[in-house]
Length: 229
Image 1: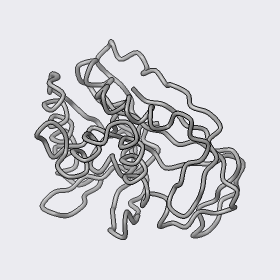
Image 2: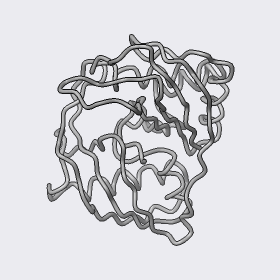
Image 3: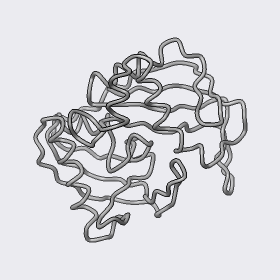
Image 4: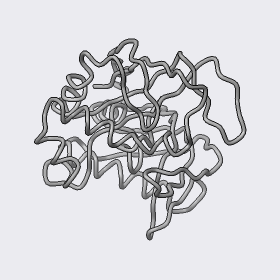
């Protein structure tokens, strides 16, 4: 399940440290309002005995803004997204949002205008083109790697198979990178993350494609990375 939260900011810009930095804390706060045991498990350990956290989200993006150098523009018309292939997690986030008129995103208070469930596309053909709206993080030998690196596809496929195993879904997956943005550095809780936007063709079981659509691609999806547009 994934859903869009329509929000507005009363400030013209958001500090870059508050684009991805608050994401994980916001998600756990919302889960904690409904299911404190689940929030603690996800924060401290992962999910169901795994270090994985089947949770994805995208930081707020805003419409009607102009591009600015070294500035993240905000407006009164924006959206952010949450999702999880695990019904218990998705339901807890949705319940945590119920009745919320404001959402504290780091140093910025966002007004909540509405919540909309977003159904998955039809994946019955076993193939999907996934465009990410946030950078995909992939690591090999303790360093971040990017499309063009000979290990990139293999490590991303390994990540997706690992997710499939946790969800007890068929784990056969084949990835083709169709295009990629330039590598960029971001901060999440003062820790640098290196990734880029990607457009991929993924062949896998329809149920796994549905799950990835709700979860995201690559590492640190609970920090806002790898969100599928």
